[in-house]
Amino acid sequence: MTIPEERHVLVVFPHPDDEAFGVSGTITTHIQRGTPVTYACLTLGEMGRNLGNPPFATRESLPMIRKKELLASAEAMGLTDLRMMGLRDKTVEFEDDEKMVRMMEDLINELNPSLIITFYPKFSVHPDHEATARAVVRAVRRMKDRPKLHCVAFANETLDVLGKPDIVYDVTAVRSQKMNAMKAHISQTAWMLEEMELKLSQGDVETENWLTKERFYNYRWNEDFEESF
Image (tube, rainbow, N blue to C red; front, side, top):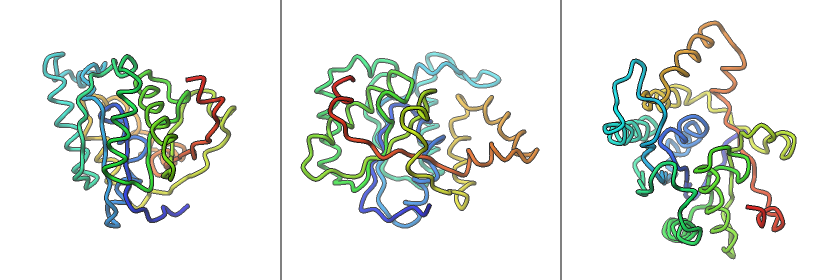
């Protein structure tokens, strides 16, 4: 599926590296076309479980390291509008709901995006992912003229409940930029990248498809569903 033209794309995720794995090819494609892209990253991922392989970070140094990695990922994608929103890793779920919604509303009102990319509520596993997704959905729901909302979902039950993704983009043309975005977050990705590159060198088709295809669900507006989160 060809990635359509957009007026402005707003990407909202809670952690550095959330953008790299699932949507960096899509981001890069929009940027190469000249479409404005804004990435709002809510935290610096300072509670990330990994400290490098071999370890090169400490609990004290990790926030600054992850900030530098996030900047490097943005550079790999060609992204110039990176917003670090200043929330604390692993506490997003405890933020006041209305405060979170207002934060999203402020971004949307400023940027007037035609497309927002975030996680899918109830299908994104991590509590920070879920809190981010809820806030975005609630903010967009209040709008009269809603932008498109493309969501990343990867919970075990995703296929059973949502079915196959609505959108699958082939990002082979920007494969190297996506790899570089993932490599930028090396404190967190060293183990995974080593295994992935081994599989790629062996011609593993599934791994190549994971790398070069980016999958999204159109958000399905359902008031009963939304009342449950």
